[in-house]
Length: 440
Image (tube, rainbow, N blue to C red):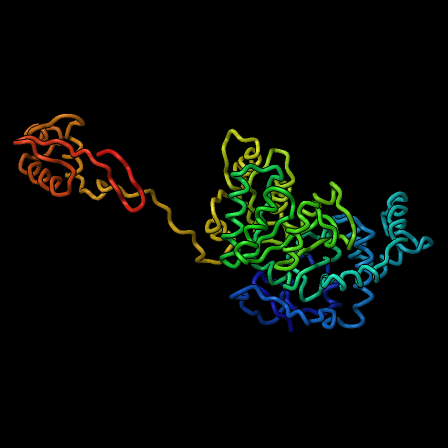
């Protein structure tokens, strides 16, 4: 029997079924069993003494080793190689690429297969797995209990596997996760918003996912860490290769308090294309993506549009129309993205039914509480000088006796004062709660 998580993804499944199916979504209904409610309370964290490899059957270890090798051979997001992996399986594909005399996979060009075989010659998957164990990390494969099944939505571009540092369960944390992305060269406004959003989401039990880059990414991670919350850094390098170097300490803190995740094996370095491919993992892993500041040409917009294509919620925080760093966000908002300004509004979109943001209203002025007739009499009073009851009755269009009654009502409320048989406005400042406004 299988169980499904809060997104309908299988929690447990035989390895053979996982490897044999294309796995781009939930299992067929016939393969599913009873369901369990989504996790509640604090984010579950696996015990430090747990050996996650002990849950894997011995016959799966060759597949794990093969997938580890393929992460050093294949480029992230290579859909052609992903199709080979589905058709041949990880072990057969690794052996094919490692053996120069083997027939190449179907559709492989000579140049592509030659380049991959050069990489295969230097692959040392056992050493990479040992390095991760020494770092206190692990290699998570499709079909593992910890594998986030929403990544299967990427189809042939699905990661071969994920190298993970940190003690928490990646799949459980990803169930309630939001991506916060944006410009590296952000403004103080953008950094403040990203920090506030990160802290607000983490404080409400949501995992903040970003790329550990300068600017918005770093601010989002710091906000979550400051709130003692959960945060995941998806790297475009190996998990032991801190990039950017200036965030070495931050990435170390994330590994201790949260999770550091990468498709690339230990020691591997980032490239421009790997940053772009990393964004697809951020988009697929989370329930929604929030863009905080982005120019018209921005990697953050790539993440947001990938999220849209995957059917995830896509949101943007508006900024000054005169700022080029807001131009990309505003373009996104003119399409299918939703405007959000704080964590409550984000959760209203990505959360469960009933997770509504509080209703927002402007400050209430004292005169808003007056009935319509009293309001007309008050508005009939001149801004300067006085007027008698008869003149006010004419201006307000109400009988004299009604006007007189409303004037005494306004007098008791402090809106007007008498000057003999005439009336005038009281000059004062109105205060309602924390809001102070001048005027009548």
